[in-house]
Image 1 (spheres, rainbow, N blue to C red):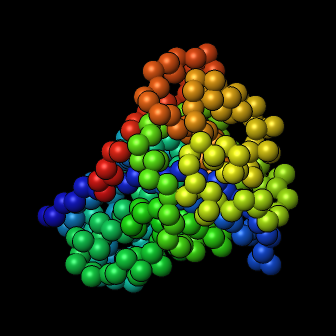
Image 2 (image 1 turned 90 degrees about the vertical axis):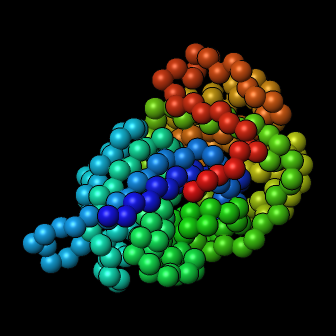
Length: 288
């Protein structure tokens, strides 16, 4: 038996612009994916299975609740994808969910990417990062990002990556994540979207001082989502009221992140009741 433990990290979107509708029905986006030190825990053990003709996975989940059937979990789908193309051993998997679901933080995608990384290591598949990214992209547009979890400028449907220069001062900030008990569907997120070129491209905005981001970085989903779920907008306003330099909904929500010069100490506000809250310095190194 072999075992590996990985810590799939979350991400935030530094700006998110929907710039065009594609002929295939999807939308072209512009965004910056940025990894943050809010992580799940994924433990993968190889396991012998007698009387089976193909490798099997047994997934157990703890921590934050995950909706849906286990068979549809991205970790299981990642295992089956790799097992359909490579010789891998059966495995027992323990997933401890600390990243909230339906938050716009990419937790499920990160778990799937880590499963691919684990299978590559445990089975000595010798896949390159590019090969693993190609597999991950088949599971979701942002899955490929989590193979390396390095900041990127993403275009296409969120699956075409370029290097990005982010202001050095970001690593000196504190971040607060606040997610209300609200689920935002893809249909809701796109219901009010009118694709158009961004007034200011986030690729260039993130290189400028954080204090200027409030004027330069926009998330096109906010206009629609904050009308449908005004509690998300109230959280954002409250974070600014507590001294945030910049605050924005991540992805299509419902999590809101905020950047502070110092550790925020008063997050016991009425509007945060029943919310998931996490606070951390961005100097913390992400250890996958």
